[in-house]
Image (tube, rainbow, N blue to C red; front, side):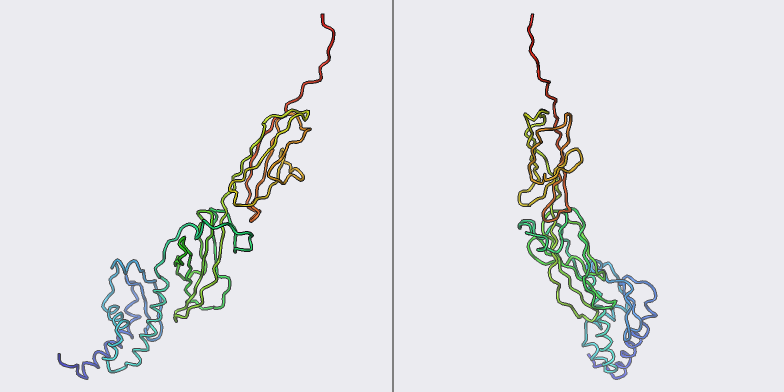
Length: 315
């Protein structure tokens, strides 16, 4: 193959320079590739983030100018063959490529991780051991706790530890918040990493631990549902909160009024009880999170005792 002449090199260089110069004009209409450029050697406007799925499925169709630009991104050797304006072209390519990479980072492949990171370990001894305690089924809502930059080109990469202990990227976007529903009791562990368009990346955050407690559905076991009003019989009420691996707080109430001092798992009805139907209620809360409460009720019927009989002489 005959070597390129100076005229051919100049022609190719002019063609490439024109491609950069007219890029804004050529991209005013929407295109499937999703990038808009305004004089590439000066700045890039991201009109639409690259869809990794569309790339993998070959569902986008870049035009000729975009193909040539991609070639320049991927083949630096091409710039060496242009002879003229090589330095300025290379500088432009580096600048454009940094923005392209930041866009790709925004669409980094993520993994859907459902459920807790760890549902078998013992619950925390206290709320201070974890960052947050919630009830399973509640929403987990996180955000960056410190903002040390005012830049607008920041990418937030949220990671979650899966049930195998592996850190998985679950969200990569310009959003500084992340949320998901807790589906089961256990530990949910997250980390955050941020980067900018210049590929400057922060250290990854310390793990943020959320512990989800199971919903409380206590029950009451009564030794008897019927007692006598004269105190000759009583009923022992025992609260069963559920899982024995947790510690609980209790408060008993009678007909809607808390009973003073009745804060144990069992309660014995008093000897002097009002005749009729009495409703006992127990409120059970986690010691780990007293705001999570479950209740149960038990009706105890108090039967009047017949009056003391008198004996007389019969006929």
